[in-house]
Image (cartoon, rainbow, N blue to C red):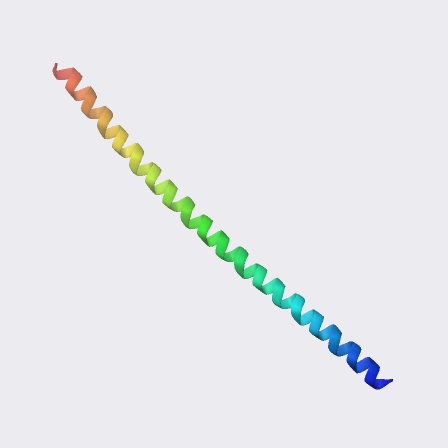
Length: 69
């Protein structure tokens, strides 16, 4: 009888270990995806700010030229 309980326990521990490993792997992947998304959003915001700055400079140049001529 002890042998039967021991084998059941071994199977349960193996199943738990597998589940725990899958959970940890999933969390790691989600963290990596979040990091990539954060980096992408930061880069997009930086590029948008640069584009808006360039647009403002171009608009100012056009306004300056139209004032002269």
